[in-house]
Length: 328
Ligand SMILES: [Zn+2]
Ligand SMILES: [Zn+2]
Image (cartoon, rainbow, N blue to C red; front, side, top):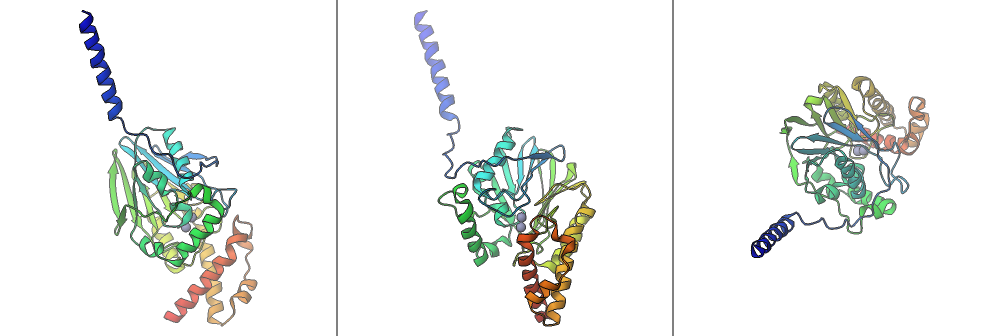
């Protein structure tokens, strides 16, 4: 009797040990500092959420948390849209997802390769997600602008990037529109670039009518118009975006909109003003400084980030208008 009990205990121990041995090994500790930024999560559809970034420029105080990131929970995994501006912020998004589901984070879709949206990739790769981005991202990754931006970010948010941070690549390059289904939820990816960037990508969660639009439309702040934007085609892309049937639009910056047509107006009018005023200056051989001084900026002056972004935006558009004039 005693012998049988001992044997049973041994078998049980062996089974228990095998279960422990077959469990996934614990993840290595992250090489970046933990973020202290609180995050507000909004639910905008049965499956669809986003975290709301601050309407500011990146700084040490805000850890570069200046953009939104979305996540969509299905019964067969989670899809994430954009990763925020550091792996530490990415971890915060993952923590918010974990408060709501134990489903694995399977896939990350990048709206475009600007620092505030893709520097968080390593956090998601760390938990096994596959990263997708538009193929035009290649051009940015090899540009001087990308290297300069990284140097600038390392000066202000180095602890949250970690000591060995390198510009993270996607796992899969998209060169055409793509739809996929996960857990019965239909996702539709559309390439609307070149607009705000050469590689703008949007994601519609069909059953929720939720459209993650990246930086094609900004809500509640003036857009960032970088040297890599194409403002002429950006205006076309806004029309293409508004043609996608959506109930809610989650922009890359600012609150979600239930009135996409109306809320796209500021981005559109701002781009139109820049193109019209800088275009006229170029046509009339007026210097940038003089042209800038003469523009009536009242319509946009009160918007957050006007002070830090407007002059640089206008200058980039002035250069673009010179290029367009030369190409005529
Ligand atoms: Zn951007
Ligand atoms: Zn952005």
